[in-house]
Length: 150
Image 1 (cartoon, rainbow, N blue to C red):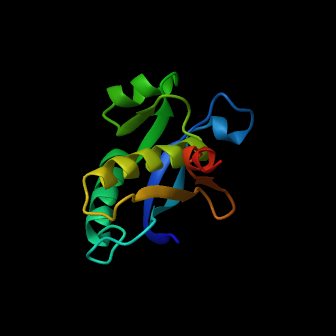
Image 2 (image 1 turned 60 degrees about the horizontal axis):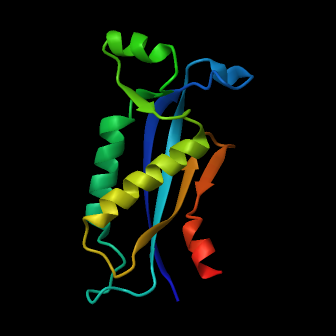
């Protein structure tokens, strides 16, 4: 048996993907919607997977500080130093800020946050669903657990 809880947050962030063909080579923004799911094999003694309020507060604070009303750019993006030089809010990613890579980033952030929260034994981030537009989304799920079950 597994118990799941999900928190949601939305934010406005620009990005660009100059390494790919098409219109996403231009700097453009999205209204992103993130859903982070935490799973645990059993509830804590207090009857929870993780305390919702603390998870929401910490996750939303990170997103608002680093991503909301800013731009995500790849480390190799020529716009990175230009936007920084003009005082723009820019979050640098190691690769490129695709919706898939951003879902993985948010999973890492949520996992780091979860580590310091009151939670059930064995609680972990089991899924991140990131909606980039009304018709485009990515889902991140841990692969290590699938390999461990084999």
